[in-house]
Image (cartoon, one colour):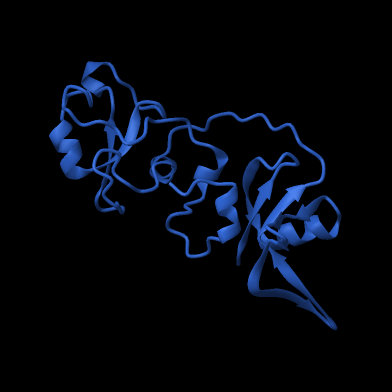
Length: 175
């Protein structure tokens, strides 16, 4: 099963949805397939079939009417944190996996720093050990990116997925 990127009417990314749901939304007129550089955004060589009919599978769709969606930050979860940080150490940029990743508290816990979206980053074990009980400035280890609250898109691990559509680069940073 492929995914489709769902955009709001103003082209702001909302989240990913199953390909069947995207097709139904387009079929019902709730959304349109996005035109990217003169061609509609469909998955190449992917189709839905029914007796006597074939339809292309949408990759990027946009709602016809804008929705006002209030975003409430989710409770802290490790996988979402690692997705937000693109599975890279935020000190040395080393590629990480489940066996090499740790959570580093930018402001150490022992010095009042809590476990929160704005105080935690993905780190390799050696950088986490080297930083120890210091702030990044004290350890002379600047962060590559400062921690932010995740967006709904961080719940889908785009860096680990083999099914990334090139049209999505127009709307989403890849880490």
